[in-house]
Image (cartoon, rainbow, N blue to C red; front, side, top):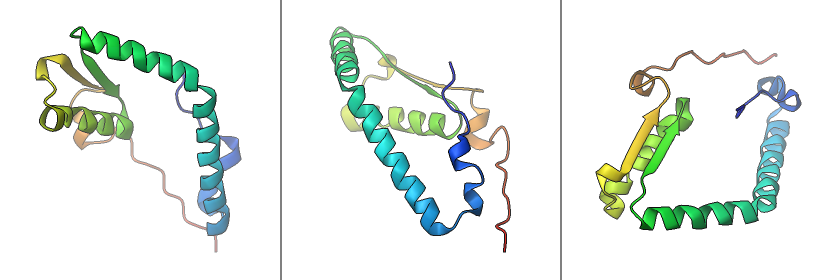
Length: 115
């Protein structure tokens, strides 16, 4: 399943003027809101199904990769002290095991802005 891919729309965004970058960020937020609104019935249905399973003793499984995985694990770890979630009903998975918590698999590309 493909979850991320470069968008030609934002090619060379690091070379854009600040106002253009801000407009692109705002545009992206509107696109995200529209996508969530369109998926509202499916999201609600999934949420209700999850609630039923958790009430019957189901587990929460957080998984991810890279920064998203680190954030997922951090969010999941907060369930125990904040909400008293039982540790045995929580599974935190990170692509690549423990190593990516401390060392990214590849360094980001940094390009210099044209003068």
